[in-house]
Length: 99
Image (cartoon, rainbow, N blue to C red; front, side):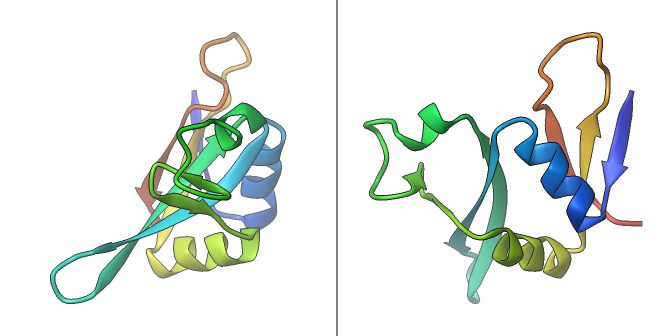
């Protein structure tokens, strides 16, 4: 079963309970830039040798929760998460349009 989160406190609590950190990446979109949102889970991902610099993962950079939530609001997105306690990837999520 999945549930959709829009409340900042609920999203942050869900992510942090799974070792999640907020990340953003600005990409060109032809007329300017588009901000991509992501969450990374587990400290090992942050400390890997393949990072492009301090606090960077595959072009994404770690940001504050406030900056991440501002980007989420600007994109009018919510976070759909699994609330199935029976197993599977408990950090499974997707971004969905609000509404």
